[in-house]
Length: 239
Length: 239
DNA sequence: CACTGTGACGGTACGCAGTACCATTCAGGA
DNA sequence: TCCTGAATGGTACTGCGTACCGTCACAGTG
Image 1 (tube, protein in one colour):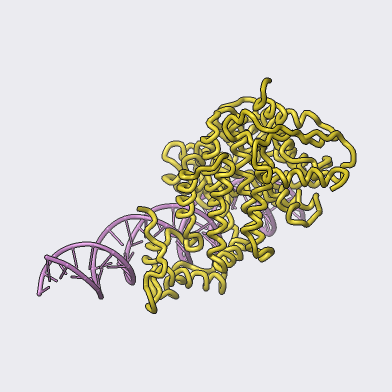
Image 2: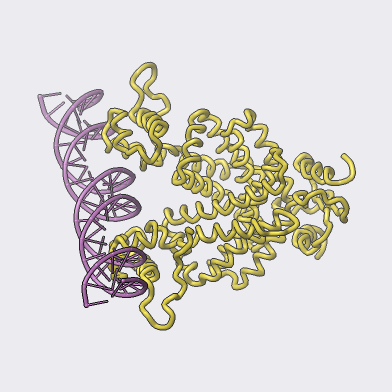
């Protein structure tokens, strides 16, 4: 009931574009010309040939015209996680986060214009960060639920995993936004492999058997390694 | 030059508390009574027996009265990193992030009241998240600079490390804010050890010798482990 | 004591975001 | 023709944040 908007070319062939898209176009044009803060909602509506009221009917706020899809994406990710059947929570999440990346890629140039704006206007950057934090929260809760275990170490693990997945995504996304790569999909695959490799596969439920290899480099500070060693042992035969 | 405020009991013994602290007290009291959005800046100033103008002279915004110390903390962290002499960037950062935790602990009950507010008001939660993101960004840049290497893998590594440190910090902080622990300092030490253990010590420059132990559990999906294996081998004798 | 600077405070006015409410227009169906 | 509903426009209001100016207390200086 919340996602009716998003007029995907409903006006068929050759008709004046919808009010919504006209507003978005006007907004971005004005932001480019005068900057974000120097543009009022009145300006946007006027250029679009519409009233101020109509603007707020289509976008909840001035910022919202730049980030119109986050809510929809969040729902999409929720669904994906709910229906996902991966062997580990981490894999499920690293799969789900691709939806975000793909959405940006799909936006193409628009995403890059938004990036140019968020780079200059801190209020917009903060807004974007808050949105991403919502994804991360979703991931964290999913992983925590998935692991079931309510111990602190499990909770910390969920926090670290969700943070790592989001960080890897951000890394690749930023590279793509800056034009430092054209094959973001391949890079995110690689990055996610790195993330998976970070975490011993202890988030899969009770893996009884399996090969156990051990590989550490420790010039010192063995204390630092104790927690992870302990964790590995826990999954093994005995304490 | 930017951090003059923060009147730390300059009024010696028995005198009316400063305007700044009276404003903060009034604000929190009203937020508790009516809620954040139901409280106007006029209300706050009036209860403090001051004018609206004075409020904005002491706090840049209505939100700022709840988060007055982030800028100062950010500077503090910057200094700490700049003057830190740790063996690895990750250790330096995980040390620096303690400043944030300690600051919250020092605030005591005030931090918990703020947490109660941010839990209810999404605008405040977003604001807090944005502040934390600034710390994370600082960490990321520090680690990236420290590693020097401008390869993508190094950049991703910096991103993952800073995210992990912040995630671990958040985990412990939240536990403390919820009253789930009283010894947050010990827990953050433990959590940071976990984080250190996540990353092979490849961010320290050319560690030639050292014990090398290996610890993997792999019932499957060897592909996922390849990257980290490769990284370990790189640091070793030969390819 | 008078003069003067300075810093903290109060008041007024303004711009703009966002909300509430009502009026208008237009298309399509009974 | 009339009615209905959806999209739009207009007006007015609240509240945040800023700019500007005036006032007052208090220091130092002659």
